[in-house]
Length: 487
Image (cartoon, rainbow, N blue to C red; front, top):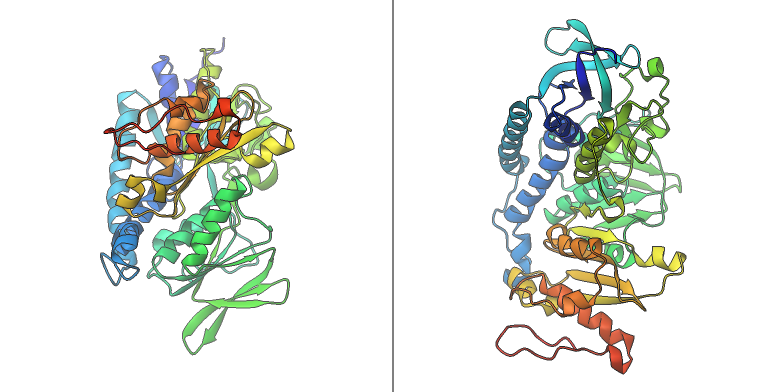
């Protein structure tokens, strides 16, 4: 075998790149990461997942959102919330995550070169230093492309980062606007729309699709829409934006959004969030015969191999679901496959977390999918308002929904909207992974009071819907335990 400088070269140090490099290092391989930014962590730590979710937590705390059901709609921890208030916590968390990432790479012996990588041939790459513009050539037996994505920007729109902005510009806002138009009702658009609405901003969401978040269970999306409307969010679905420009008004410079239907909307700021494009333009993929597809994304097989078998692609740049959690797993699996190590994963049971307010998390199948595939099923639901913990934390709107097979009672999917959804989902994920039935939740004792009790209440609700005597509740009230009969 030809001698290479490294066994594995990873392009990009986001979640997918980190996990791929560390996994290969644990297999005893010589690993290097080429990172074109001055710091490691990629979009996830520096601009995307970590900052946005930390900002969300700051919004929830400072706005008093979680306690409004208890103390009233006017309750707030801080009255005049500024971007500086929101970013104070964000900056702290980002610094901590950067330090953790650097330490993990260092202790696993992964070398990091701060350079922009481009292919010379299938095993050789040119690295251009971001510090002094010097160049060098390195070779590797296997290569993992984990360059992530960047906000998609229409060249006809004059982005200025303050009035007309993309999602990557949010952290640089100088102040919180009074009105905001969000173009694009995808995950990122919905997350930021809900955050600003919680702060009292008048938000309008525009999307050319008739339904937002179409991969999420319809009932869960309807619950989110209802909640956002309660926070004065206006929806313009089925509408297409034809132009965005700046105008001068009596209130200062504003943004005007022109719709193809002839409507015109005016707001203080506009967030253009129609998706993200793969950050692949600088890689010189032509040199190795790899052709990006729509928006610079790369196609891969089930082992995350591109059309060149020893070159892998992982993370957001390969498309849906574009989550940090799935990117981590993809990086691990790619590294294991590259070096012939055994691996097992269950992609169909990857959980999805959407950090809107309220948050959403799902795992498994939804009702639409099962109906289309002719699978007979029944549903069980539990509302947070029925659970003591829901009252304690002030969440009256949360919902946990179980879907199970009508005949075998095997659990098929779990769908949650409400506080702690992205944590709560993992109970259902574990039962799905072991082919468990809805009866598991009926026969299991949950701590009281907890949101996890929703599983038991939903299971009782679902079993009661079956109707036949043999399928009625088999557990009566347990006195003294805090658990209640859900019949």
